[in-house]
Structure formats: structure tokens, C-alpha cells
Image 1 (cartoon, rainbow, N blue to C red):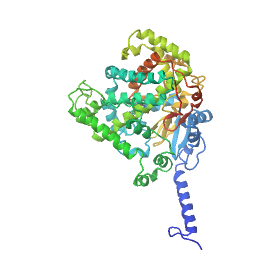
Image 2 (spheres, helix red, strand yellow; image 1 turned 90 degrees about the vertical axis):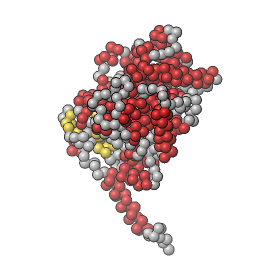
Image 3 (tube, helix red, strand yellow; image 1 turned 60 degrees about the vertical axis):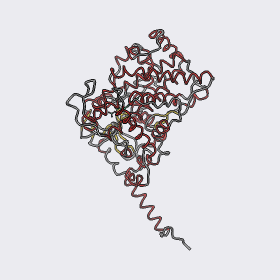
Length: 503
Ligand code: HEM
């Protein structure tokens, strides 16, 4: 006797299942004709995954590298079901990222990022809303502002040295990714918001815990991301079931942290000129104390929602990128002792007995710059950036239809053997001043390019430089032998390297 399941008999279940598969198939292939019309070569697209299968198994960067070799510097693909043109050609990038910026102002939105407190992040908002926020926050990273922050950065770096000294004295190994991530979190909290989180002393600090959880872009650990990637139209249902990109506890942790910082600021008599202050001034449309924001181009006051989202985006961006790049630079120094020795010689030469490493002193360290530039080429944490085309435009004979996503394959450009011979090799000499002067600027784009490039670039560089100077001056960095082999990039949204340790 057949037992009906939830009131349906077996044939009905089979019919429902087949209908669901057919509907999902049609949904995931509905845009598969768009790229055929453009006549741009590219890999075959499959239902549900588009052309992403290689990216899922080998990482976005490696997939781009292999496809560019096969199809050329412009190829067409489907990011899941979204038609995408991948552009690695330098002239076209100049056009897209700079000259025709008005047609390529916005980024593709991950559907999941429309929940508070992430919905108004500078990284995801469009057009004038983006311009307004970018305009209000850019002055926080001026040379003058950063010069004032170097004392705070030095303090955090000294703390890092103190903590690592304990480990070195015991002859133990250290987890560079964690230590550098905490260093970077402490700095952004201090210099941008004036708050002390002291995550270096407590790597289980809730701040670190929530950051790490939020930045875990593994599709298979975060069902919300999985749905956003494969079937975004099911997101409302996912939300109704309580799923979200940012977990509820992380969302309320970040919201409370920012609100506390704002309240403390309101009642404090200490005058600050940092990122948070600029945002609060932009909320009230006050001219900044330094005369910034007096320009009539400033369009609208920032809303509370915009302030909250952009505080969170600064935390998120600074935590992962700087921590990872620094950790990879340490790995490169450990694996290339001659580079480490040369760096130390320059540091001693420039600094003499000084223990305060100022903004201006850092400018005199040409070899340190070369090491960081090479590290950002070889181990850049952002394997790609993207833009959406807002109206039909033809570039170098290729039609970019309105709505198409342009994917800029940073990793593949940085690892292209035609541009960078022996790309796997860590070689700071590639960035010697005479070579840098001749370099095509679109062959090295770790911070993106054009008006929408990384707003935190200068802070990132100064933070990394100061920490590396402290570390190289105080320690000889080596790899802990067996872990050297574990270094493999796993690229989903940002590059994450498998665990490894230094001593
Ligand atoms: C090594 C460190 C860093 C790297 C490699 C990096 C890389 C990038 C890249 C590739 C982009 C996209 C640019 C584009 O689309 O053209 C970006 C955007 C952004 N970055 Fe960074 N970043 C770093 C550090 C930071 C820091 C420290 C902050 C904040 C304090 C920050 C805040 C941002 C923001 C807010 C955006 C969005 C800008 C906009 O949409 O206008 N980044 N970053």
C-alpha cells in the first residue's frame, strides 16, 4: 500500500520535482543569449554555475588566468547567471576605470548586502549617493591627517612587537595572519573612531570574532551566500527564514560599537579630526575644522544609516586587507632572507637610533616601498573588482551593452607572465624606480584604479610600512618549515591563504 507523503502520492512528488528542476534550469539560463550577440570568445556556460565552475574549484584568480591565456585579454563569461565581460587589456581598463567612468561608476551588488547595517556602505551604493559619501570621507586619508596618526600607529606596532617578543623568547611559532589582523583592527578602531579595542591582547575579542565570521566568504559555510550566488530570487524567502549575510549578533555588535563611539564623541571635550568626526560633520553639513568640506559641491548631509554602514565598511575593509597583506609580506621576507637583510640595512641607514617612525621618514625608504609593491602584486588580497555599465558603449570595437558586468581580473593581470616574467617569484627589483617609471599603471592595480579606487590606500600603506619596519628591526623572520608547503591561495571574494605560521 502506498503511503501519501504530506498528502501527495509519489507520481505527484515526481511531477513537482521535475517542474522545480525545469523552472530552476530556465531561470539560471535565461540570460545565456546575451553574450552570443557580442561575439566575444569565452568558456561554455552551464546551468546554475554559468562559467564559474573553474573559479569554484581553482579560485577566481586562477580561472581568470587560464581563460585569458585561452581566449585573450577580453573574454565573455557568466558569473552564475549574470553576463560578464572580463577585461585585462590595459587600454580598455583606462577607458573603463577612468575616461568613461561616468558609464562605469557602480559596482555589481551582491543581493545579500541590502540588509542593515551594510546597506549604505560606500562600496555598494550608487551614483550620487556614493559621490556624497566618498566626498565626505576622503579627507580622512589626506597626507596631513595621516601624518597626525603615525604616533597611534607606532604605538600599535610597538604592542605587536611586545606580543611577538614573548612568543620569540619561548622559541614558538606565531600565526601571522591573526597577529597582523589584530594589529590592523586596533589601528582602524583608534585612528578612525578614537576607540581602543585592544584585540592584539585578546585574539578572541568579540570584535575579531565578528569580523572573522563576517569575512568568511565560503559559500558552503554561509547558506545565504550560496542562495545569493545560485538563485538570488530566493533571497526574500531566505530572509523570511531568518538567514542573512551578516548574522544578527554580528549586526547588533557592530551597530552598538559604532553608536557607543558616536555617543562618547558627543560628550567628549577632546577635539578630534578623524574619520568619524568627518562623518558627523557631514551629517550636520558643518564645514570641517580644517576647512575641508567647505566646498559647495558637497551635496547632501549624511544620514545616520549612511554613517553606521560606512563605519562598518571601514572596519571590514581594513581588517582583512591589511592583516593579510602584511602577513604575506612577512611570509615573503621569511622565504627570501636576502630581501629581509636588504630591508634591514635600509631601515638602519634611514632611521639610525630613532625609534619613532614618522610619516616623513617612511617616505625615504625606497626599498621598503619596493617590497610592499611586490607583495601587493604577488599576494594582493583583492583578486578582482567590477563595474556595471550604465549605458551602451563601444570600446576598442567591443560593444559593452547597458547592464553588463565588467570584471577586472587583478590577480590574473598581476600574474601574467607576459607582463611579469616568472610571476610566482617574489622579486622587489621589479619595482626599482627606473622600472616603475616605465611601467604601464594598469599592470599593477592592487587598489583598483580611477575615482572609485581604494579610499583607504594611503592609510593601508603607512600602516604596513610602520609595522614592517618595527618587525624587521626587532626580529629575524623565518618560516616554520613544514607549514611552508601549506601556502595555497583559496580565492572566493578575497584571497585567503591556508593556515601557515612563522617563527
Ligand atoms: C592592503 C590593503 C588594501 C587593499 C589591497 C585594498 C584594495 C581595495 C580595492 C581593490 C578596492 C576596489 C577599488 C576599485 O573598485 O577600483 C577597494 C575599495 C575600497 N577600500 Fe580598500 N584596500 C585596502 C585597504 C583599505 C583600508 C585600510 C580601508 C579603510 C580604512 C579601505 C577602504 C576601502 C573602501 C571604503 C573602498 C570602496 C571605495 C569606493 O567604493 O569608493 N581599504 N580597496
